[in-house]
Length: 330
Image 1 (cartoon, helix red, strand yellow):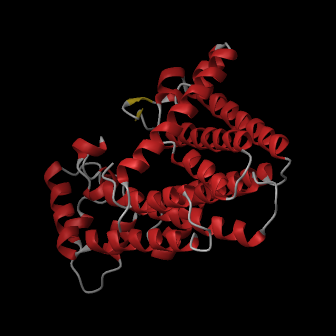
Image 2: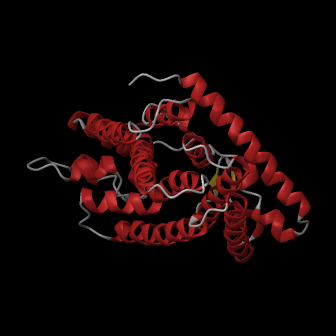
C-alpha cells in the first residue's frame, strides 16, 4: 500500500484547524456554563477524520463547499456527543490526556452537555440542507445516531456475554464506529444536490469499509500498540475483558491452551506481568498478523469502492486515508 502520508497528515491537520476554529466560535458566541461544558471535549481537539471524509467526498462529486463544511461540523459534533456519553457509561476519567467532561462538570451536567452537542449537530445538518438544496442529510445523521446507540448497547452486552463471534463483533463495530464514517461519506455526496444512487452507494461502501478498518486498527493498537505513542495503558482492553478483534481471534482457536490469556482477560486483579504474558501469548499465536490482515482487507475494499470515480485530488486523499488508517501507530 503506497500513499503520500505527509500529504494526508497535512490535509487532515488543515481541516482539523478549520473545524477547531468553528467550534471555538460557537462556544464563544453562546456564553453560559452549559456551553462551556458541552464544548469542553470538542475544544480538546481530536483527529477530525470524519470531517475529512465529508469534505473530500463532497469534493469528489463537486458538492456545495459551504454546505459540506456545515455537514462536516455536524458529523464531528455528533461524534463528540457519543464520546461524552460513552465516558459516562464506561466511567472513564481521562480522554485525550485530559479529565473527561463528567469528571470536570459532574455527571448530570455532562449528560446535558452531550444532549446539547447532539442538538447542535442537527442544527448544522439542517443548515447544510438549506445551503445545498439537498435533502437527506438530516435523515442520514438521524439513522447514524440510531445505529450508534444500537452499537453501544451491543458493546456493553458483549462485555457481559461469554460467546461473541467475530461476525457479532463486526456487526457491533459497524454500528458503533463505521456507521458514522459511512454517513460522513454519504452526506458529503449529498451536498452536490443531485441524487445519483450509484455514486452514493459507492461512497457508502467506502465509508463503511474505512470505518471498519479504522476500528480494527484501533483494537490492534489497544493490545499491541506502544503505550508511549498511543497514550493508553498496555493491555487495558485485556484487563477490561473487551471483546475486540485480537481477543476474539485468539478465543476462536481450537485445541489451544488459552490460559495465558484467560488469566488476565477481564481480571482487574491481574498483574502487569500477567498482561505482558498474555500479549506475548497472542503474538505467538499470530493474532497480531491476523488482525493487521483483517484491517488491510477492509482498507483495500474501501479503496476499490472509489475506482469508478474519476481521478482527482479528493479521490487520492480518500484512498490515502484508507491506507493511513491501517498504518498509523496512534
